[in-house]
Picture (cartoon, rainbow, N blue to C red):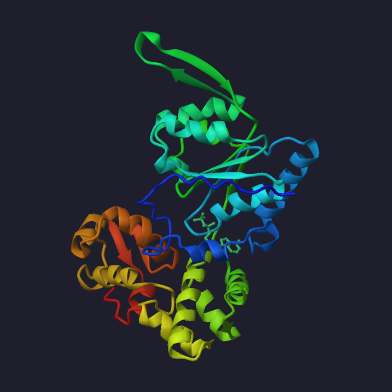
Length: 342
Ligand code: ADP
């Protein structure tokens, strides 16, 4: 029987893994699947995990350490909470940015129960000293604790209960090779096809007790950038809009009107995406333009543009990155209804 999960969360106020401007909410937790069988899509990943879980359970051993990588909102945290549920064990949640020194990690490691899970989100943000401290914990289930200071300092070698570390990262490339290699299972989560998003929206509409017709489900799915968290956020907004303005029933017309009111267009671009594209086309004649120049013009940091705006524009084939700078594609011009001078 599954034991109560221990939720011990380290603070990370500037954590913006979500849809820009949409931090994790209580609703996010409410809509999160609590069992693996409730998860939609990612079939290959689920199948491999089931095999690993079955094998570990039949040997009565902890599951090997697991690393999930992929863009925000695709289910890394969800996997980290359903896996302990399948294993019938507890989970502690921590965030890489909140673990600033090895001492911050000690309470988590000493709290682990045999076979339980320690989840570290945004694990690439761990400082090197903390990362190195994890190595022996992961490999030998041991840590050194320094007691006292100066000449009186003593090192205590502490044995830990065997546990499973689940790491999640949006930037696998930033992980050091020694840390990466200590994970026995590595899974990459990719964007969800429309049909999976529709299924997620349908299930969550039922959880929220809101009527969403098939055409509306499609409209919301289509504008959700392949990302369940964004689909949930869109659904929640559309539900509010429908309840306030349309008698509670979500039709395609209501869904489109609600999403357009917040600047979400037919491809799922938001206001910020469109002003990037508009700047590239109107001010820089479609490019090539350097990222810094675009960032200065929009008065937004180049990191934000690179992490939160460009990936979707690139994926939607509205812009390309060339050696000379960013350029709008014919599709980009067309999407804004502008003639392509090239
Ligand atoms: P990440 O940790 O990758 O940023 P999360 O696991 O927090 O993403 O997922 C965000 C939300 O999206 C969850 O709260 C959940 O409601 C939904 N979600 C993610 N993956 C799935 C899935 N496979 N099936 C159903 N809902 C999902």
